[in-house]
Image 1 (tube, rainbow, N blue to C red):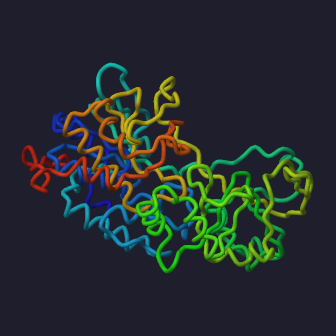
Image 2 (image 1 turned 30 degrees about the horizontal axis):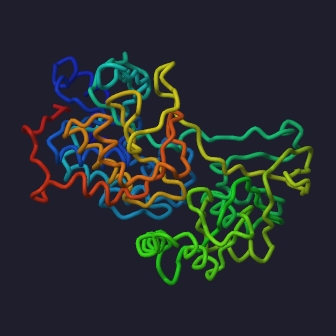
Image 3 (image 1 turned 120 degrees about the vertical axis):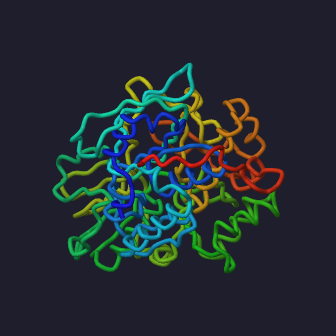
Length: 450
């Protein structure tokens, strides 16, 4: 697949020949989020180029991805493009689908593979940022280029985040990250503690439950464990329907529906008669609800400390463990220049509040992003750039639809962003042309690899 796409050598040649003087927009990452944003930009006459560190595009679902994901992690990223979501072992087929989509959407000459952005230096005064771009193998001299707009679509799943566990140096067993849960034979007959109650934790639990001698889960945040379907409807669809129909009693009705279907609350106020999705995590799992409700897989509070084979929890209880699996997410990539990484609330969940022209796309929502979210974000970014929107205009456009009072989720580089409720409606309203069609390309497409 990579033979059909340009590389860093082509980029360097294009810069030397003056071909790359025209693009105003750089997209970091050619996964589904980056390609969705680029496709939306092309439809509005914008001129993006994409830089992909891997030899092939595809992001999470590409063959041999540059991430610590385990192969059968369930993600909706593939659904952000008009592609079918792959199952385990189908990465190669998905990669071929990506190439077909790239060709059809006119992206083939705009994606530079084996090309890594080493550093982004944003400007406080002029829009955009300087990008230090190099070949993935660092075999050639890097390039420094300025772009008026930079869209980060590099994903969140590169460097595992391991928590600081008191007494870890004395623990006689193994402490692993969820990305290391691959060879299940390593867990046969073991006493396993899973730290975390998110989707990854429940996916790991489903894999380890049949082989472990004992399995426990530890969670520190209020969490509702819910089934995939409510009255035969996928839970995300059911939640939207409830919210639209019962705006004022939405939380209580959601609680009733989930309770009827065997939902289980962990560290949630037992006197509460509602599910507050702004302050309580919702984790979807069909396979583990039965074992958890029956007590076959005990739920414990936050892990406090470990020593030898003993684990202490926040309530003073203990258990024995041979393996601790930390389902604690991934670290942000340090790509911004030193001194730039100051926490900021993103405007509209896509634009940096401090640096004009610095955009973000592809981040998950609080309890599992619906598949089209990156396509929606890409549409919003493309429309805002095409219309020349600044911070105030973008904030005004999204204010009626985005609830900034919801709990925040961590985005790359330490920035905070509110959840994405209302994105589907907001983006459709903001980006639709009066004729129902997108603006044509401003000029003939440029072959940046030529």
